[in-house]
Length: 423
Image (cartoon, rainbow, N blue to C red; front, side, top):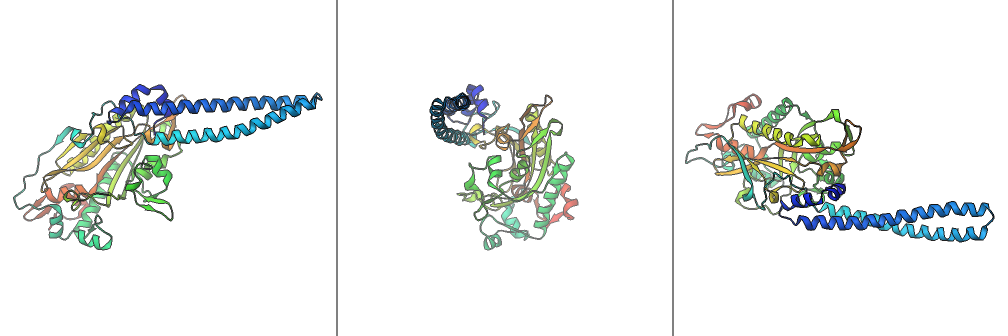
C-alpha cells in the first residue's frame, strides 16, 4: 500500500509512475489527496473541539471553587454538549480514515521509472537470452506424452483423486521432483539464504500483508470454517515472518528460502496452453525472500535475477529474461523480471520464475521497519523470487533432454536422484 505521507510529498512523481501501468495516475492521486484533505480538516475540527472541551473543564472547576455555581453549571452544560459533538466527530473521522485506507488498497504499486510502458505481455522487453534451442528429432514428444511413456506422472489419476491440475508423480518422476527441490534448497543455502519451513495455511492478516488480499482472493483456496487460506506461494508466510517487527540495521539484509507446495485456483484457465504441467492448481516451488535497506534494493534485485539465472544455467536450460511492462506487472511490484525456459517439444516459452522488488508497498502493510544508524525507524524494502517453480522446469527438462534411449538427467541432479536416465 502506498504511504499517504509520500503521496502528499511526491504526488506528481507517483502519478507519473502509476501511468506506466496504463492507468490514470493523476486522477487516482487526486482522489487520494482530496479525500486526505477532507479527512485532515475533519480531524482538525475534532482537535479544536477537544481543546475547547479541555479548557471548559478547567474553567468549570475554577467557577465552582470561587462560588460561581450558576456560571459553572452553564459551562458544564456546554461541556456536555461538546462531548456529544465529539462522539459524532470521532465516528466521522474513523469512518473517513477507513475510507481512505480502502481507496489506497485499490491503487497498485508505483512502477520504477525503469519499467517500460505497456499493457500486454507483448510489450515486455527481452533483456537477455542464454543458450541455444535444443535440436530434437521429428519424433520428439511433449512432456505429458513422455510422462505417460515412462510412467512418471499420472494426470488422469490426479483427476480421479482431486480434479484437473493436481497430478500424481510416480517412481522416478517423484524422485526427480524431490531431487530438484533439494538441489534448489542446497543452492540457496550456499548463496546465504536461511531455510525456513513455513505453514501452508495463513490467516487474512498475512494475505493482506503481502498484497494477496484484497486483490487476489478469487485465486486463493479458502477454508471457510477456520477463515484460513492455502498459500499461493511461500512468499506469503515467509515475508509475514517480519510483520509488526522493528529490525536493527545490522540485521539487514535478511535472506530466507523455503520450499512449499503452492495452491492456486487459476479460475478461467482452459485450453491447450494449460495442458500437462503448463498450469497447475497445486505445484511445488522454492522461494527466496529478502528484506533490505531501501538504498540497496535495486542492486539486490539484479543479484537475485542473476542467482535464478545461475540455477537455469546449471540445469542446461535455454532461457530468456524479460523486464515486464507496467501493465503486465503484478499489483504489488515496482519492478519485475520474468525468466522463461524454452519448451522444445511444444516450441514455446514457459515462465518459471518472477523476481520482484516491492519497495515499501508490502512493508507498509506489514509495518516491517528497521532502526537506522540515527536511531530512527523507517520502512524496509522487500523482494522475492521463484528459485524455482518446478512444473515448467520439469516440463522443459523432460522435453529438452529426451533421446531414443530415454531422458538424460542433468549432471547436477544425478547426486540427488541416484540415476542418470529416466527410461
